[in-house]
Image (cartoon, rainbow, N blue to C red; front, side):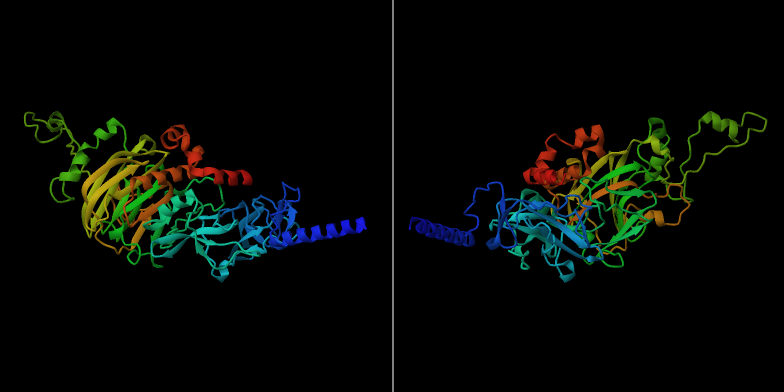
Amino acid sequence: MQSLLALWIAIILLLIIAIIELWNPKLINEGFANLVSVGESAVWARWMPRRGDVSLDPTEEQDGYIRDIRYFAGYTDVQRLGKDHDFCRMVQSSTDKKDMFFACALGGTDGLTTVKYRTPSTKDGFEISRDDYMNDLGEGRAAYCRILKTDTDHFEAICNPAGDSSFKTDTVIDPNPPPHIKTMLQFYEGIVFWLRMKDDLLDYAKNLTVAKGGGIYIDEVPRPTTQGLEFNGDQFLRIGDTPNLEFGDVVQLRYVRAVSFWVYFDEFTNNAKIYDFGNGPGMDNVVVGIVGRGNMGTQQKAMQSCQDESQKTIPDAPSGAQCVHEQSPQTVMLTSSANVDLYVCPSPELFGEIVPPLTTPAAKPTDATTADLLYEIWDNKQRILHLQVKNVFPLKKWTHIAITTTSNTSFTSGLAIYKNGKVIHSEQNAPLPQTNYTKRNYIGKSNWSSATSNDVNADELFKGKLFDFRGYRTMMTEKKIKDTVAWGKELLGKELLGKDDSKELLGKDDSKELLGKDDLKESEDLS
């Protein structure tokens, strides 16, 4: 009788446990404190750890798919388990590049497919973004989120919540994104073009069409740091907001209030332009570049005095007096008909060499260690702004430049030029570009380099590297500029900057401040 009673009690207890397991599987731990409930549905959960057949090596992926770790890749919790035991990443079909989706290999499903729990495919209209992340929206499980363009110049953090068997199709806005995403959203405010040049040539503002000149190439292999986009002196980019590479429909230069970029000069090629947007040489140009071949030695600079003055006072040849090398009175007396006291023929007459206007004595590339920043704006054929800031660019070192108005007014505004987050030049009133429509918009090339000329001082193409090239419809605040510099430091990496640069550009706590706990944890998981 007692044994029968005990049996019934045991059966009742088992029924209670089964009911609790179905109603709330996480309520009963059953003593396995280090294991988690897994499976496609919490109702049929089992107590198992992470999958043991999923590799963190990005070159190893389920047959038929390729992993792209330029997107989020790491462990998270999509099963509402309270443990990060689901490995999620972006995958692409090995036979169709347009077929990409975000998938998770669920913990406790060893031996089963790793791509069943997933989002829709890009072939079906699913939007993706490099600025993606996982975040709990208050449901106890991680949603797949990314920054997407929702309207003209407007970007938001959009999420696909996690369901029991897949990510949900309907999206929601993330009301509380993590700190690094809040920083990125700040970068997107007012953006009109953004070429990161880290491991692609995409415009993250989704306004530009980019054409490559001279066989320029960027390595798209995902890496934690970047060397930017390299220009070999014969390469350039041509950009526009239309398929025929013109500005005016979306990117309107008249309303661009700020531009920022990282630049590295391998060589100071003659009058190199970092960018030149215009309609030809001396026609509606907005230009940032360097002067000549950089700043040379004292003796070489002295030789330029005549040329420097010629830029201000000497007319174009052959009209009027031209700039010539200086000659002493003694030399003139001996070599010209001015020698009236001697009754013998003078030595062969020598004349000063006529120097074409605006010609700089060419220096060897290794003679210059710094170069001046040149910023010009042209209205039709008239140059309405000419700024030259001394010794801004060092040779073979990364430098961040931001050129921004100090207000968002329509016609004239104050102007500030920042180097590595600090103001190096300012103007109280500076004119803005006067035209929106430009047909020849180059990065790394000058409009003047395409002009037919016998001038030995012709502009040469940029030789070096560029990274994080942005344009804004609104002014850049000092905070945004400093945050931009800090973001760039981390991606460029200390090994690219060198000792002197690391002291100037990389503080001790930059990596900790920029990464944060979640990023450090993810980095450890993938290492």
